[in-house]
Image (cartoon, rainbow, N blue to C red; front, side, top):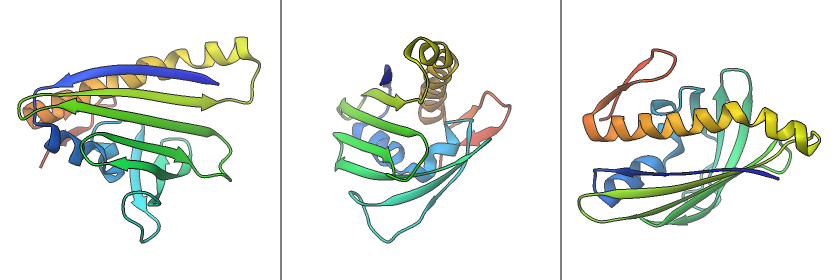
Length: 152
């Protein structure tokens, strides 16, 4: 298993940051590679499932852990080709929020090749978190692909 870990501090209240980030439908506003996220079942919080359309593929995932203002864990559904698990932990107050983000992958490649394949995603994840920070702090951002997004 391979992991990407990052943390970022955003100058916005914990409740506001958590509400925005924990809703997967907001992912296209801060992750340039995600084009669309749609909810595909009726569950809220734990058990909610989504279809994520990315530039080159689609993935289904569900929410495994949802603790308001503390933690959200999403994971690819069992039948998906690629295993991805994202664990985001939140700490903060009325002025500032820190997100600790860990993404685990199972890539069907030898370990030494998997490490090489993961270099670009590591940089992309870090850049996406920086765009999230910019979006929430200033109200707008220009993603890596030139798309302009705003926070409402």
